[in-house]
Image 1 (cartoon, rainbow, N blue to C red):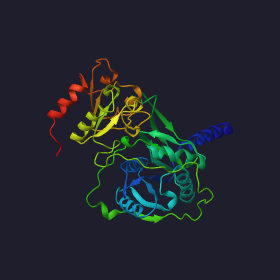
Image 2: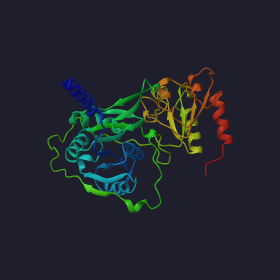
Image 3: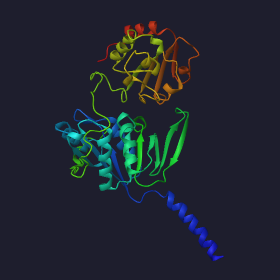
Image 4: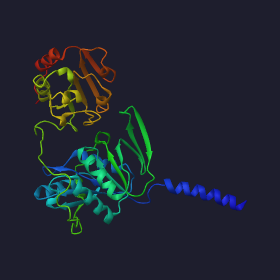
Length: 354
């Protein structure tokens, strides 16, 4: 009888041990930088790390070379109150964010730091680096996390955002995540935050493998959008054109409207596939996930893959000739009309941005 109770207690203990949150939390955030500053999406990853628990030590990992890296590290040290340490890997190997050297760097830093979690934003950088780093660490990453309910409990969308899946991580440490930056907005810093700047430490790269100076991928070139226009992933206003715009020449109307109201330009996959605009402007499940304060869709039918990338927008305005277009089901304001008549009228009546 006593042995039966003991066996029962042991079973309960075993189950509890498997799902108990980490005793101590420490998070490594893989950060991107450009022009001497940390990208907003990486700060969103820090915000996500804060959601793991109150007593969480957050280290930010930066890699690159030269003065730009030093400026980015200085900016990172005072960019978020949750950052306790900034780690920098200064080497020509990291002049470009390629997956092979970055994955080995993550593996090296994890071996030394023993972090409980590794987090990156779910952009092209995170999607490129995390799978390879996870393979080196022999763990399974959890991708596209939109909510953190505990140190090992996460929520992510499935079926193009039509359902939410709750995942409990029971694998070995570290728990690796990619997060949707739009789900973790960055809070503004208090005025006296500079006095709480994090320490900046150099990563010792002496033991990093030198045997594969030529990796399986190589840097070709960087194509960036107009610096004067807001970044699509972080813009307050997004103006998107779809197949209904009909041509690259007509898409210039979208550009003019976006420029007039200080918005970023987006496009549907159909518009990108038709060659109207480059694919870095694609919004949707296979493009960029956006959640601006105002999302304006012109000639967008509202395919489920596109809606998955913009459904969290605060206000959605849609213009389409088809009154039965699915986009109207998610729009806050809808206008059944010809975009070739509506956009010129908007350009005429909207005052110039100050």
